[in-house]
Length: 467
Image (cartoon, rainbow, N blue to C red; front, side, top):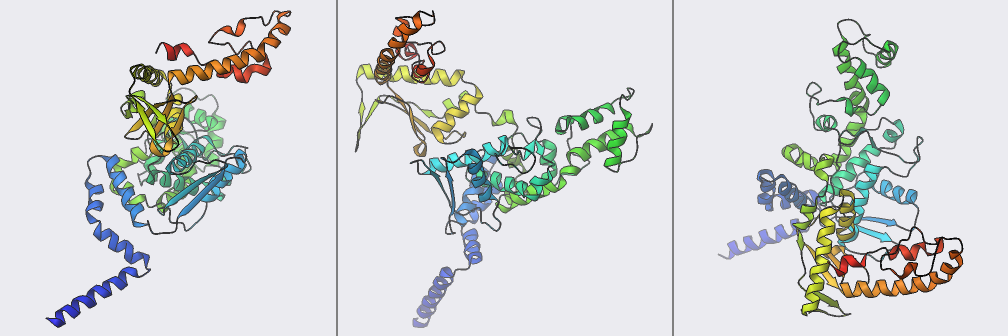
């Protein structure tokens, strides 16, 4: 019996020593076997969004003890320096992108997960709109070019030499692992080749060719109409080492030219992009769960935030919240309940009638990025302006009383300042006494010196007062 106890103690001690061993490969193997149920769950989950979430959580958990990645950006710098900071961060080699992420905005007091969300949103936005970095061709560098839903990698050698496509892959994979925005609008043909599709089954269209001159040349070969510019066809065939046009190969040549323009010319870019995506650890999910690919690379229309998506997630307030330094109080006064209904109704009306761009801006203000949370809270508070607690998915809107008081104070100050100018401008017929006595002030006709203050007053009090 004593021997058995000694053996058990020795085994436990040996296991403890192994567990403390610094070999990451063993700890990862141990974690994978311990969490085997979670791993199988992402493979078998019916919902691809849930599968991607389970996979991401498992991957991030396995590297939770690794050294943190620290991304710091100074918002006081110009756009070029900010973009260089982002590119430099993702340009590094041999980085474990599943390590814990810490983000900081220098020049801003914001902290917490809201900063991480803002940074992830900025990364995808810059990747879509272009970086303010001159790599020899333009002041703004776009990694992908073309029409919406038909974006293809740029054929710029400068981007390839500066590994910008690997940077793009790391950005997209890293953001996706942390639950951030997807990358919308990538051409289905590029997605097809990116994940090992054959050339014969590539879903190519003319819209996939961003070069309009090449597109026009390929379009000429469609059908049986007489060619207007046969020299352009010959020059293109010669430059790409394709057979010359003849009476029997017109359709074949049209398909070959389009395939070369969209796929063959961008093959090195696609390979580099794939390499960057693989480095984030996301590749295993994308290969085993093909239904996740449309979530990572959705069409632009599918990536848009709709009013109903936001409204379904909002938890509406039932009373006005008074915020003090160390505690908060809910006020259930009847008049305050009416105020809550009015302001809530105003927000609901705004969301229902807002454009997709306005909804994205609202989400970025509220959440830190464009992705709605499962629960997003609204509070009505005694404050002059709306504020957002992005870490807690909390939007604070001013009550009717607070809004009226703030606007009346601003209105009085503006009237006092503008009245002197009003009489001076009256002789010219541009400005007269009493013009600023309305609640809704027309800032277009105001003197330039008063533009900034009067723009604030363009908020319509009637929207709050009447609900």
